[in-house]
Each structure stands twice: as structure tokens, then as C-alpha cells.
Image (cartoon, rainbow, N blue to C red; front, side):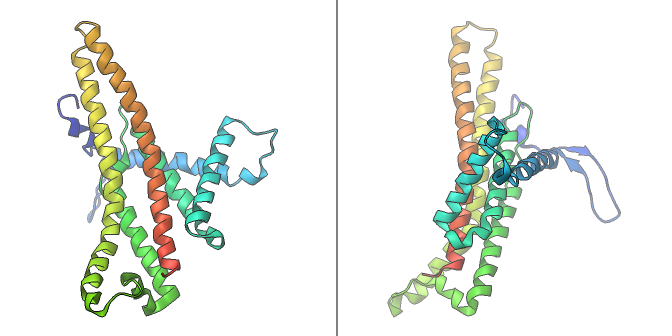
Length: 248
């Protein structure tokens, strides 16, 4: 991993299990996603009891969890609407699972499942297909109007229809690519700086202090990016759901 920054994203088999037709091997990526899922489960379980936690029993963890819950609830109400809070569990679940998946990659020798394009792209395609189904169930063929802004001149209809269709399809890929690219680039940069620190550890102290300070700063930046990307994913999902529920 020291000489090739991309080596940290290599998917390695931990337990190999083969059947006649397919492989059920446990890889490092799936292991860390399972860890992220378990951590997320306990957060979900605790969040379900937020309304029943008294002021006396509150601690730092409960305050943090409640703050996250209320932040996402406020986002759902602002972006989708008060009467569509039924989507709150979905948005909160996506936020937590993506946030935890991003953060486990910051642990030394950890692996971030969201750094691989397969997981974010799979989630983003699933979300776009789901919101499309929601729109068709509610509006039927009238849902096609989402591809054509009202008041469009007749001569521009064919061109705008193609552009809007491509833009709509691109949502399924841009959502996942944005997340994976940001997490991957940050991990590569941290790996390069840490490798440089290791190589210069035997040289003068001055040559170590500057890269080490930069490494600490980049680690803090990566932490912010991990939180921000989970938030951006959630808010974009809210926007896509709103577009399928409320036609303009």
C-alpha cells in the first residue's frame, strides 16, 4: 500500500466459499460494509427511542443521535414537505449507512465500502428507479411531464425532451459517482502523505513536522467530507423524491 496508493482499494477475499453455480466469498469490502451495517443498526435502534428519552437520562451519545435525527427530519420537511415525512425513515437510513461506511474507511487499515463504485452506483440506480416508480404510480402517463417544462415552445419540444431525458438518466450515475470519487480521492491523498511521512521519518525533524501537520489537516478534511457527502446524498434523494411527488 506504501508504493501504490490504489492498492488500498483492492478487494481481497478473506473467506472463500464456492458452490456449484456461484461464489459466496467474504471480501474485505463486504466485511467492512457488514461492520457499518451493524453500527448503523444500533444507531437506528437507539434513534427509535429518541422521543422517550428523558432529559435526565440524556448523555453525549443520545444528544448526538437526537441532533442527527432532528437535522434529517428538518431536511425532509423542508425539501419534500410536512405531509411526506413518511420518507423520513428512508432518508435517515441512507444518511446513517453512508456516513458510517465513509467513516470506517478512516480507521487505520480500514476499508471504505463507498470508495468502490459498485455500492454507490447500485444505491443511486435503485433510488432513481424507485422514485420513477413512485411518480408513475401517482401520476401514470402524466408523469412524463417531468421531462418537459411547462410553457415550452413547440419547436423546442424534441430537443428539450432529449436533453431532459438524458439529464434524468444521468441522475442515477452522478449520485453514486460523486460519492465514490470524493471518498476515493481523499483516501488516495491521505495514503500518499502517510507514505511520505514514513519515508522521511528518519530525516531531520523539520521534514517530518510539515507533512505531519498536513496529514492531520487532511484527516480532519476527510472527516468533514465523509459527513458532507452523506448529507449531500440525503438532500439530493429528498429532491428526487419531491420531483416525483410534486410535478411542476
